[in-house]
Amino acid sequence: MNARPTIGFIGLGIMGRPMAAHLAAAGYPLVVHSRSPQPVAELVAQGAQAAPSPRRVAAQAQVIITMLPDSPDVEAVVLGPDGVLEGARAGSLFIDMSTISPSVAVRLAEAGRPKDIRVLDAPVSGGDVGARNASLTIMVGGDASDFEAALPILQTLGRNIVWCGSHGAGQTVKACNQLLVAITIEGVAEALTLGTKAGVDPAKIVQVLSGGMARCGVLELRGQRMVARDFTPGFRSRLHYKDLRIALAAGQAFEVALPATALVHEMFKSLVVAGRGDLDHTALLTRLEDLAGMA
Image (cartoon, rainbow, N blue to C red):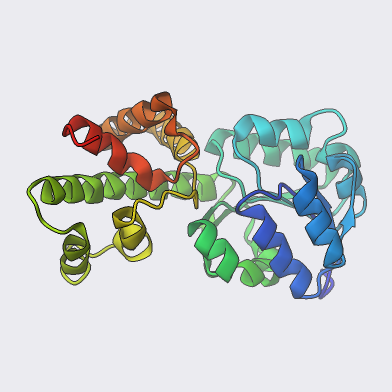
């Protein structure tokens, strides 16, 4: 692969927009497409070209990246009419950085094979902060040789980049990540709710817990914002709810009991049903407060 291949980037949301901007800043020729015109215009102002469809993106690029909300979105953009596989040339590398079902990741790889399109699943962790700081953790599934080819691009976007195994392995590890993050958010939210209702300053709770065995990424990256009740979405609750459905489906497929995940899945469901699905996933705190009569 050339040092600076043309990259097609599809999906310029909270995560995709800063990721694409990092690629542009690193000197990669960029072709972009998204449902919302504003981020497209911003990337064009940085030197990117706009394309009217996923097919047209793929036709102009050697590497195609998607960053989309859910499995059906990725399937429509990649496999559907006017999609990526209709436009991609033989030898292209397609990297899906969305969080989707591992089985769908395998299906995308199988669909690309007859067309000689190499496929990687490469979901990310780190939220909007990681996307803005190019400090994402990226977990990759697919052929090792394709991972090596993609590594310089991925290093522009993240710091902890791990090849996890064959197709679907990246998505499986992401499901593991998402269940652990959700369970940790639940634990932090329970601790803050108990301490606050008992009359302790929640900022003091965060200060103490951040310095001992209970310290964790949720406290480090979101603790102060939870205390300040700033639930501006870095990662939307409805998307984490979707990710937990993926994790539970994987548990079913591999006959693994996930009791804590099932409980937190129901808590996120209640958050979404309460109309708070577009808040940050740490807004789970508000549901604990509801149950404690603190609303």
